[in-house]
Length: 145
Ligand SMILES: NC(=O)c1ccc[n+]([C@@H]2O[C@H](COP(=O)([O-])OP(=O)(O)OC[C@H]3O[C@@H](n4cnc5c(N)ncnc54)[C@H](O)[C@@H]3O)[C@@H](O)[C@H]2O)c1
Image 1: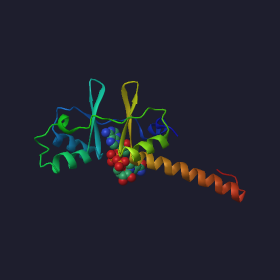
Image 2 (image 1 turned 180 degrees about the horizontal axis):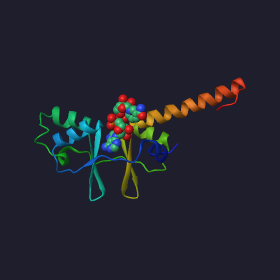
Image 3 (image 1 turned 45 degrees about the vertical axis):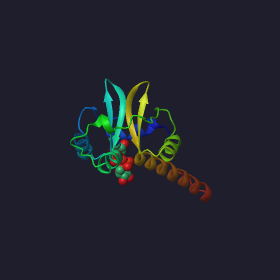
Image 4 (image 1 turned 135 degrees about the vertical axis):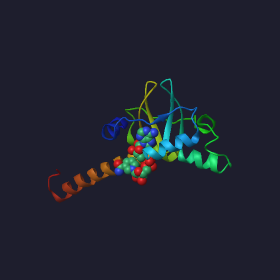
């Protein structure tokens, strides 16, 4: 299964912000959208990513305030992205080894979607369930539907 196939199911919507807003404003957007990260996109270019983890570690633990800190001050600019035709297992490897929970999907230079740890885990479980179902049918001699 590819990243494109995950996007086919979950859609291409991307919630993005500008780096000039405050962290508080960004957190409000995350809260309203019920998401754990927002992409910073300016002039159609992916500039950074801001996550709940950034807030916890770079604001709360540093005794800063979200209303007085701008997104560009704490956003992560070392962004790990995937391509539409990348495999889902490659995404899981990145999530595990690079310790990220959100992977922006970039085609050429344009962001065309985002996949999260939840999206990847859900797809992998579905794939494994399908495999188990087919093996079960094979072993018991019944035809898989
Ligand atoms: N049942 C499902 O289909 C499903 C899919 C994903 C997550 N979840 C659950 O939601 C909870 C949190 O999920 P998470 O840790 O994967 O992260 P999350 O809360 O950030 O993501 C939730 C959903 O929002 C999407 N999303 C996140 N940021 C986005 C952005 N900036 N623009 C557009 N879409 C964005 C993700 O791709 C994912 O589909 C977990 O409990 C997880 O199991 C369920």
